[in-house]
Length: 133
Image (cartoon, rainbow, N blue to C red; front, side, top):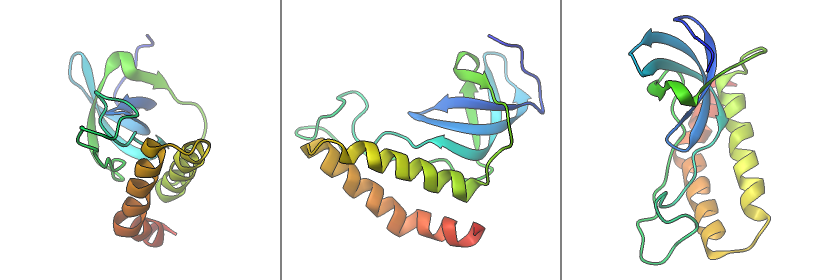
């Protein structure tokens, strides 16, 4: 694990999503990170029963918002090289990627997850896209 410090730009896994952000505080075994971009959209559904639809609470998970703070575990924190993408552009790309992966196989889980992604876009993400672009 690389030693990071306040002000470093990193990539971190958090609650089934991956984000690019700036470390704003060292909290011992975690970093407080300010989200600047979305690298991987969070997984939809019940994380404890992957790919299941029946008999589980099928959760809708939004990506963390621009400048939202997250407590990233240090082992889930990695170096990020390159230019930080614009938040809305990164969100749109992450949504497109998860949608493409879900469309590869026609399963009940994938259909339900696609519905949740469509709801997120309609109720939240389209406003984000419009505000940033």
